[in-house]
Image (cartoon, rainbow, N blue to C red; front, top):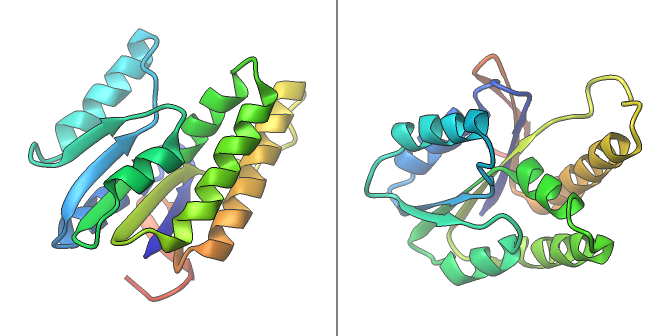
Length: 173
């Protein structure tokens, strides 16, 4: 059952996803898409890591998300992906523009048929002004299109603000 959890920076979306994963009663595999390339990002990763139970599995994959999902999905498993917008950024920064299309289509093609539970965390970026830079505008556009496509395929979509979840689609929490 795929679920999409959206929210702004520090909205509580990751904490909510971790809570849902912990309460699922399933084996949990955390799929991290970040690349901690600087001290600030390493601190963010450490903060997230400290919050997670030690018995959770961990897969760090910045690019091949669909492959990792297919390899780890099982009826008795909850996969928690944090986060899709970091994954999108990683793909946008590659020299091969076709790679984003390939990886996005692979994700969209597999998400609805994966066994078990899948929690997808992503930053909602479409609430602000249109950015001035070409790459930033492309990022906002790509994130918006990805979120729309995933929302169609997910059984539940949650928008989180100030730690409070609002159900946009599907069953209440």
